[in-house]
Image: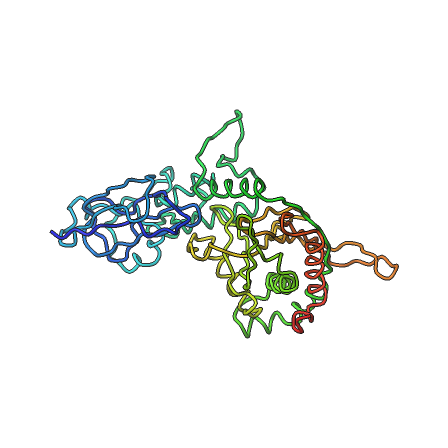
Length: 411
């Protein structure tokens, strides 16, 4: 007998513990090397734990929902044993995303009796957890897994689609509210951490917000003129995020205090530009970091933002990608927000809020004209940033967007 331990991956210094979700394998079942055995939820990301070797799951040390720390033993694998007869005859109920990929090439499972119309929908444990937490009706989800099973990817996609079409409360409630129902569910680690950091930000920072408006016509014209050629050349769509990022970097170079942070009684000036882009995901708000943005092209930024968005939806962002940052951008405009006061992401000292671009009447040269306007909001820590620097930096962002040629000339 050769036993190998399955360990909790090394967590970052800022993450002391994590929570186990659902095991994909049970004792007695065969596992393949690098097969995902379980997912671990931290306050920042969801980590996958692969099998260190092929063999048979001999023991589960930590059950579903357990709290664990770096290096703890989760389970044990016997690399020389054979799967038990019961395990060999039972379809793996814990498989999720692998149903549609790796297991598609595996030998077909023993045929099961056809399910009747009244049978409950079969979903993987990971998918069931998501559907339950998000209040999504499993019967309305089209499963793409083996035998029509609902995978985690199916559940995430269904939730994302439902969230974009409905303004219903985020609580995991069923659609019907007859009888004044209530449901109590624990916060996920990510949601609890978001709550903690927001309270920390408001308690420790002297937050003030300044506003301005920007005429997006020139950026929209530039994008319209080159978006087809841009996509053909770079393989990614030309959006608006890259223009905002470039405008922010231009302003931060002129007013370095906006890119600084507070450490005790010291002000730390950063000689680099790591911009956090707030991204909504089924698990909550995450802020992956674009590092050394001043060295990135428009195409590089668009590619990285698109990749982060896709991986955020799938819960695939790494701890390193969510750590650090000297300034953040939050775009509530994608959800239709007209105006908001964003909260600073500690230990940063400022954050830019972007909103929906709408045609509005404005006065130009004494005449009322219609222009695509966007309201910008810069929240800043008044302990180290004076109103003058905050206002001028926001004006610099506005000027760069209204005349994007400034970004090419670095003026």
